[in-house]
Image 1 (spheres, one colour):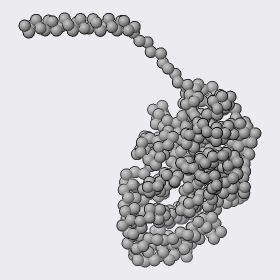
Image 2 (cartoon, one colour; image 1 turned 90 degrees about the vertical axis):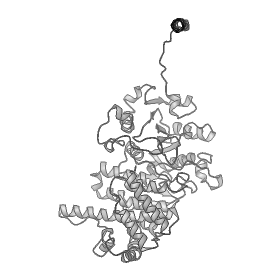
Image 3 (cartoon, helix red, strand yellow; image 1 turned 180 degrees about the vertical axis):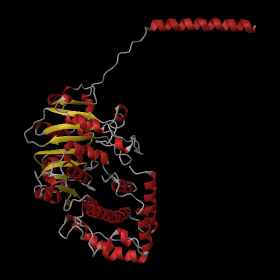
Length: 505
């Protein structure tokens, strides 16, 4: 989460845009994002140059050449305001639109990118404030974007609030993507899941990525993201390029409205947090999804979509609202039955209700399943996350230092730390779900439930349905003994009052 100092800087930047004549909040976000991106590109080039100097080798895949050096943030921001404005308007943006190559998905989305800052004065103000922001640190870019999005009245209502990075990381770590996977997020937004998956593969499988075909797959056919918001697609493309994925498949697609015949059984891993606050008309919903589940609810339709998109053997980790776990309509029960009987339901991880605050207070869970088309559910693993490292109010303040945050903290957590951050424990117990977790009591924070029990409960997936509450026996004194004590006290009080009256008389 961003600090108060960063928040005040963004507020200053936001106010500068509004007073400078740009009143559309999405346009403000877009223009700020472009400038953040241009600044970050300069930082990446600087890192490449340092590496080249250390190794004595030429710069690998340079972003800027001798001819485009003057388009670097560190160069044009040193010029006079009028000249800087000219360079950005006439040269930087045309260059930006073709940065990924003319045939790339990036340039396809960026072809409509326009520089709409109206005056050199506003550009100078924006440059000065952005120069103070540590865009190279952690996920500051995403956190800043999240904060900017919170300023829009519709944020959270249209699903465009950001999944917290530590929750994304938990899901990616649990799914353990491999270099051969084809990963899809059919409601990708700013591509947070795809970026985290790319970082994981780069970290855990760096040697495999040295192989030429594997490298080509990583850059061209491993990552797929769909959205129907062109602004989100542009930001997602920039985000992937910043994380050195050259040609991700980021494209416009109304995932629930378009038939997915051309995408059926194509992907081996789905990571997603789809919008789940709306209903669609049957007429505007893809027929092949309605054949799986007849419903207007977007959260159920997305689950049906994931089943269509996955290859047999493909896996999914997706966030759903609690209602999906226990809803009693025919569509709810039918879809849950399908996951248990026709495929393999792996796990339900219940999240605390404050995870998406301040944008939404809805209770959610992560559903993990494998598409088999032939059943395979024997036991389902449940975990009740009660703390994710941050306060569960609107402030979402960190409860632990940074080195103890996330699913893989740099410092081991003790029992007191676990009370504030359950995520490392989720990951550890997930690895033992087919071993010692099978023996764990249902009074614990995690346990497994046999398929037969889930069938008996009409395919209810809610944690509390299977959790056993231990009631401690408390011994109480017999009521007559308590009354006798009260009578004795009353006698003593009366005797004391009589003595006091005699003394006063």
